[in-house]
Length: 315
Image (cartoon, rainbow, N blue to C red):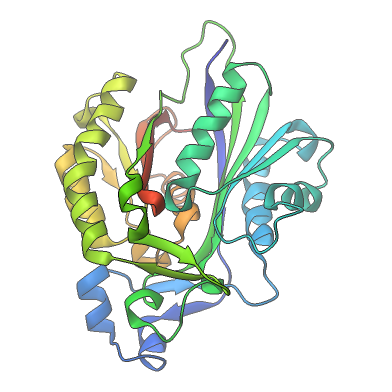
């Protein structure tokens, strides 16, 4: 058994940008109301001809190009999403087809907003066990398909997009680049974040989620750092699920990562569910705000009330 590491990242967002003023023309809201409550200015929204697997494939292609790899080099595709329309072919299979891959294992994981960190841990475990050698791990969601655009409490939150990571096994004797995962859930509070019904619609109990996230998650995130052998003050970056700036900032402060760059991609992208963490991380790396080898805490949380986090070394 060996460890694994993230060797490259990529992200993709649809071209259409929806501003707070655009939303104010659709529902009873305002730019000031949205900014003061969730910190979001804009979000990208996919059109009806842009399915979630297309968003995922674009992000995956960019990650592969960054890694200098071809689709044939991948033998496992994991896609974290909760907005796939069809049951089969699954999103991972459609991504593999779009990218022209050979015969990878293809699996979707639905852990909503914590999906990417669950998928990353699953890839790490698979590579450690020797069941694959190189994985493409993608978080992608098209929240525009499942939100009620007449409900100002939810439509102001969401955006569409995808982020991807290429993960490969490290040679024996080298330090792993992905630390141990700490994951779990609060099943009795699973109703606090929902995507239910026909057609499916996103709903949440905002105050319950806010209290849970800001009080219960910081000690769990600190324990993630402890498992990785990294003190919070040694972190170069903290990339939390981009749910709401009013959650991200207090949680990051309570973690104690005083020297870290805090990802705030939610301001420009909204809540993209499983896409949020890999998109935010990819942008930090692309802008040069964190360097190769820097330790970064990734921590997803949300639907089911699930959570999962790990410390990685940046590619």
